[in-house]
Amino acid sequence: MHICFSLVESDGEKLYHTAYLVGPAGDILAKYRKTHLNNQELTWATAGDELCKVHAIPALGHVAMMIEDEVWSPEVSRCLALEGVEVVLHPTDWDTKEAGELAATERAGENRFHLVSVTRLDSPGQLVSQTTHAGEFLGGEPIPLMRYCQGTWCRWGVEEQVIVDLQRRQAHCKMMGDHLDVLEKRFPDLYNVCTVPREDLHTWRDVTTMRPGDFPDEYRYLRGSFGLKRAHECRGSEDFSSSNH
Image (cartoon, rainbow, N blue to C red):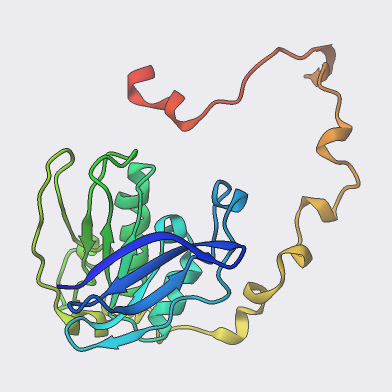
């Protein structure tokens, strides 16, 4: 049995959000320090300095890891795919249903690898552990089956283990339909902007000298009239759920 999970790692005075892959003998086969920290993690964690290496493990295949909301970063998954990963292990804590139902499906589908996401039973997004399959294009499938991966999910609120047989060959079929090989049909010479440092990117900061603090909160223009701005609070995604309509 192999186990993948994430913990807080202490290294001197620094803390990391780190994923581990532990083998049957209890030894650590792989370790990955999360590189793409969210706002909450930035208050305590140090970012890792490299993406997870792809490890050749006889019982599992070519394996790598990513952590939690890194599933929303397309570059992480694409880099792992280009390194030849077959199975991405993904310890997570689903904060929204979209993370599992949308982002996980997109990352596995656009790179054609198996994505095994493991989480706690009471995750806030009300999703549990799931496996998103790489899939294999055989020809003649409807477009949704060509484009989107299929998955195997545990049931929310049910403590259970689901055994999934992953076909390693599927992760080597990179075809999405008859004409698109998701890794071969790439033109890296056109993607230089992807490596431009964040501070050098063209954003609204480059086209105006105004800053958010330069605008008064009390007044606003509304269709040419000058009036008081109504007091309001920022709304979160939970305010737009079906239960609040």
